[in-house]
Length: 241
Image (cartoon, one colour):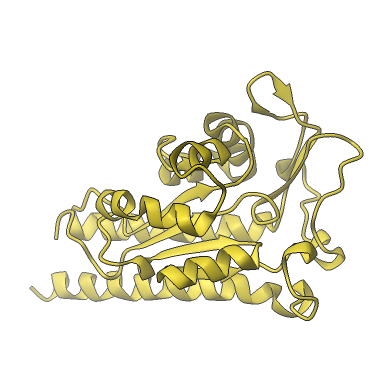
């Protein structure tokens, strides 16, 4: 099974703004969260960073974690599943991985070290983001496909991602994003996608965070449950051999 392409592998592609965090460049810049989503911004010191450096030489006003505890629980569950999978398979490639895809200009190293690590801790960061190879920003897209379109860029990246993460097909890659256009485009290519309805400017008026916000993590945890069930089956097989 070592490094085998498995249908149970999953790769989560995470948007940053209005998905993991609300990041403001200056005091007067409003965030793009709806009023109901705004209540899920962190009030803890662990989820607020004043003047983070996200691009070289530029201090942003503030970064605030969005749904921090839900994300932290999700990340910790991934680590637990991966640890169990590694123990019984000796596979070098995790069963579940994450990468970042943002249209912002954030520098990958600075975002991961100055923001992500502060929000979610050293263990989550070292286990799920071991290097910068899984961080894609505005510059990557403009350099490689000359325009900003996350679904087109995912399609461009697919051969690389398929090889790196030992995937079989596009449906094993799940984009989590607050833009319905990005979600629709990803699904058109055959990727999985989960719409995070936190940004009222990127959604139909009837699709509110109050009504549909909980479904985001419910869907993500269902994916983890499938992976967890697979690992449990493999563990039982090993025991009975």
